[in-house]
Image 1 (cartoon, helix red, strand yellow):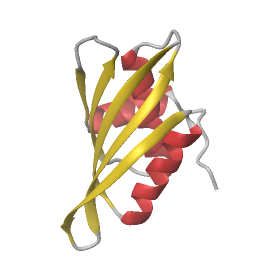
Image 2 (cartoon, rainbow, N blue to C red; image 1 turned 135 degrees about the vertical axis):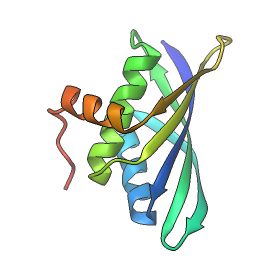
Image 3 (tube, one colour; image 1 turned 120 degrees about the horizontal axis):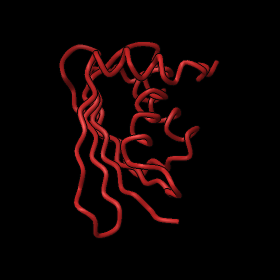
Length: 116
């Protein structure tokens, strides 16, 4: 087993949506280390979530896509996600998830149920 360091930036989110995104990550076996909320004006913020994940045979792409779908599912809508993945001494990988990715991933992970 290996450990990966993740940095997820999600916006725009409300405080409640940020909390829901953090809960979604925890439900997907991802340990949240720190959450930073940068105000964007009004009730909205940019959420920066630093997290760690134990990885077995998962690829970074599959894992981050599953986490993105889980967070979107939990907040109930689209929000832009930028993500970095660092595993051991490997090169850091960066990903962006836009609206096209939202439609594709929500269909691919359609069996995920929103938590009550």
